[in-house]
Amino acid sequence: GAGVSQSPSNKVTEKGKDVELRCDPISGHTALYWYRQSLGQGLEFLIYFQGNSAPDKSGLPSDRFSAERTGGSVSTLTIQRTQQEDSAVYLCASSAIGGGLNEQFFGPGTRLTVL
Amino acid sequence: GEDVEQSLFLSVREGDSSVINCTYTDSSSTYLYWYKQEPGAGLQLLTYIFSNMDMKQDQRLTVLLNKKDKHLSLRIADTQTGDSAIYFCAENYGGATNKLIFGTGTLLAVQP
Picture (cartoon, rainbow over the protein chains, first blue to last red):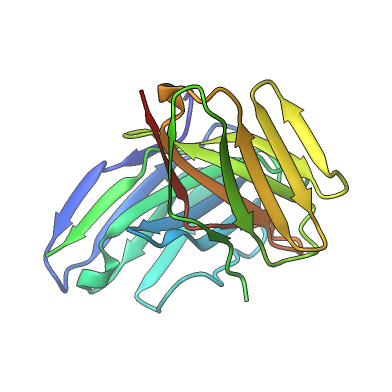
């Protein structure tokens, strides 16, 4: 595709439910990132995938958060037992390489609301 | 720590210059970035500067880097209403990961 796509664009869920957020990176991009954007908090790094290397999960806020990237392309971010503080916009980005300038191309985000 | 700090809000009149400031933390960052987020749109890379440079000019944009003070600024000359957006500075946090640490963002409001 022409850019990074994410689905759904909006998700409303009840506290305690699990949610899955999907990211389709730009074709051929080997690096994929997840960020969370909360009001007044800027962008918070969550997790990074680069090729077949082990992902950098250092930004995941708790063990309720997990992500996988199948076949080196599509990624899914899963939040189990959602809490109200998980409400945020979840952004995915991809880049062609994992080093150098590392221009990251962002998707439009998924707005998650936990009631 | 990894905090990148920015002021939250800046208001200017159309035609004036805007200066958005940022303080970063990692002196080993090789690149520093400015991203722009327009209403309803995703983030886009606006400009960047390599860490061995003091200044970079790109049309109406001027980026200044003070490595000693870990201070980065973005100047927009002749600010237009279309420049209204949230501007994020970011540093690439050292090591192989190349994860970006973003600031909290500065909302630039341009008054006609």
